[in-house]
Image (cartoon, rainbow, N blue to C red; front, side, top):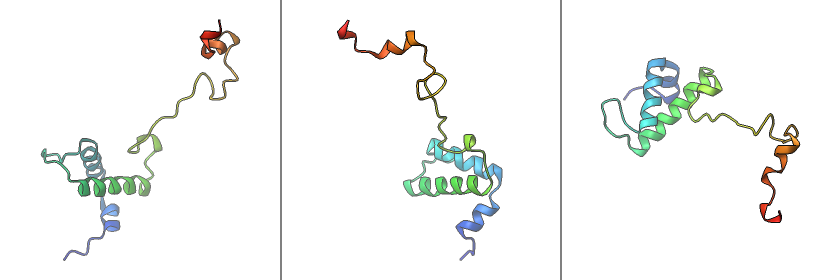
Length: 94
């Protein structure tokens, strides 16, 4: 039996292997077209996340990253001009 552990595999993973696993998770297929099983998908995703953490991959390049969006210049709405502030008011009152 191999003495390869999950942690050792992550430490030895190359950027090319990382990219291949990331693509496999995204497509749910291996590069040769075979479908990943649920267990393979879970293990690949865990490996990708661990690799990103261990190698300080920038947050915006990590798997599952969603850019935060705000309305206007901030989420508080304090910079919304008065003429636009009433756009969401109840039109049935007019």
